[in-house]
Image (cartoon, rainbow, N blue to C red):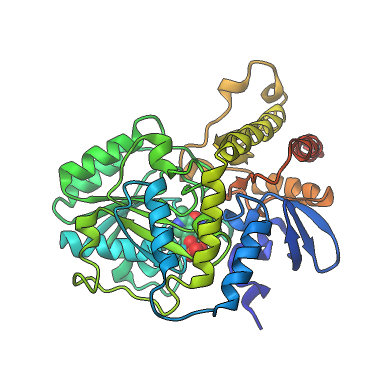
Length: 424
Ligand code: PMP
């Protein structure tokens, strides 16, 4: 009844040649399937689960919110409270809108950029994913890479035409697109740390360059922080990198595990959104009171215990070391990491002392595409046999949560040692 048996394609486990498990429940770092198998979960619902699953305070707050009613289609104080918390964490969020998914957030931010600048084109980066709205499904990373479908069928050519694609970490590719399309580009939209072609950090100076050139060319800079927001730091990529964008999009963590996302930023830009301005954007369930409660509670927990970021960063570092010992190329930024099976990863010298710096780097979409998907699938399956669930694709991040204790991380490192090289 459901295409591929799943309601979002990467869940189907096709890239790793097996059927997905069906989840019964999840608690802390664990996810339990319908057959009663328990897995240590490094997918964390693809990012929201920074505190682990079913945090007692979040569940309790949500239960209380449910008792008051599930949706009103009218404003509530909670929406203002959440907006204030977001602005406290990310001061650049001067004005914002709550929506229900990351897709909606980025789609809306792009519309606002177009409405504000009066320009039509946008620049995105190959391998960056910004949700499945028509104009953004161009060279869009993760799910599409896993399926080997570069672009979606059903997207009118006209939409794709106004989406220009540059190469991540390649300043020249951005400069030349902006020059060829002078006065026509509304925005450059970027994952400030890319996490949908596997994790790919921005090279030193790359985000600063985007800031300077967009300002010079009169285009807006949009940070898609659906993954990085409240994950790299409370203040997201801006706090982590020091670079400021005009608009930001948040999802995942900000909804505390419920369908909620946010877009916003400069007040002069956001003041163009209806009913203040002429850019239309709306939603029956936007600012849903139950989702807002989950978001408020999650952000409050993170704000009260900022040790979370130090802990998840350190633990992710341990995982990275375990992968490096096996010869893999690791990209890690805070608690986000990916281990890449780059060609030659299994050559004996890759494991030699002092080899570290010579490993092939993964800096963009093309590098990521060159990885050995079969080796990844073998590793995935061996991890699953050992009760550890990592994302079923070479092109997704591994998410570390505060529920992954040091002891569990040690066990995971041992499993990595057994799973990567077996049969290599
Ligand atoms: N932007 C980024 C950077 C994402 O990673 C995602 C989803 N993984 C989205 C947008 C789309 O969010 P959603 O799946 O909530 O629509």
